[in-house]
Amino acid sequence: MRHYPNFRALIRVTFVAALALTGVGVGAEGGPATRSGPPRRFSGVLSDETGKAMAGVRVVLVPGSPVITNEEFYEQQEGLPATTTGPDGHFSLPSPGEPQALVALTKEGYATAAVLAGSTADVALRVSPWCRIEGSVDVSGKAAGAGVEVVADWQGSVADVFFSSSTRTDAQGRFSFPRAFAGTYRVFRRGAHSENGRSIEVVAAAGKPAWAEVRAMGRPVIGKIDLPAELRTRGNLRIEMESPEQYLDLPKVTLPPNVRTLSPEARLTWFRQWEQTPVGRQNSATWETAKRMMSSDEGPQLRREERTFYMLDAPAGRYMSVAQVFDPDRKTPEPLAAFTYRFIIPPLPPGIMGTADELDLGVLAPAPQGAEPGDQPAPDIAFRGLDGKDHTLSEFKGKVVLLDFWGVWCGACQLEIPRLKKLQAQFGGNPDFKLISLRACEVSPD
Image (cartoon, rainbow, N blue to C red; front, side):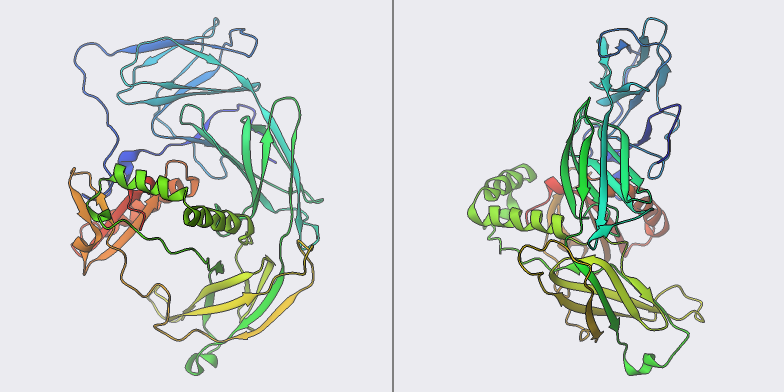
């Protein structure tokens, strides 16, 4: 576990405006206000939990919905308005042009507060003590050993500030998060799908460490992938296999006939009401089960020479994975071919949560080409763009469309923003390419 003596806020900032990578997207929720006259400022005092003023502490004003975490995921953001508290704990900063969050981290704890656009009101920052989360990781019926990455995601926010952190297990498979916000956490092993690993919930509170036992819920699985005859004998091929994903048996959603003409707010209202119906509750329960049961391995381990893959801890379910075949002699980075493989892992006997007994799937043949479940027209999603106009996905028929769904609560979505900006910079000038980012709560339920 790393320790950071200066305890500075390591913050990744997400701007709603950063998603305006094209002329079409979800409307921004506000931008820097234009002002005339002298700059406005606000002041405040930082104190500990007993009310004693705290001097020499860095206070940062952060736009967007920041995630406070450690440097394994986020780089320190430079250029943010910041100051250091004086001997009496006093600080002063420029008033923001849009709602922002005020953040201070100390050895003793953390403090956050919301600051409204143009506010000149005094802010009282009170430090809450750090909480501690400890636990162990069990893989296939035994302690995981050293080096397994564990993530603690906070299931809440204070002043629209979120907290997430990661660490690695020691030789005994144990881990510790010595500094965490108070509240409920989802603790899981880091895998190829970082937000979808099997997880447990723990409640962190000051004074007593919360204990999280991240246990295996499946079994080791081994299998071998076959290739078409024309590729089978070529020994110089490189094969990359994606982490298998489970199929979900979700109930069919019957949309209202006027869903295309409803405003984003009306669609959201309808969806919230649908969630309370029997079908909606079944849908939510299926997703919750999938989140707890989905494999959080570091992806399948593939031995190229034998085309054999290995999954350390796979729960029961129907799976699909894609293997891409590359020819190292070709100058282009595109794959030579890609094949889909499907397989079923049967459930364990009743009462057994995880086992070290290995399941051999044998040789898996690629699925027939053109039989992918996704080889169907995309639904004609309706959304409102940055131009204030209503759009539908069908407007871009014939173009290459990268459709990105995101949420302010989604750490993985925030991680994708630099990659999306890079893609837009690379292909945005091509009239046949369109990048559309939609906030999850603002799209139609289909």
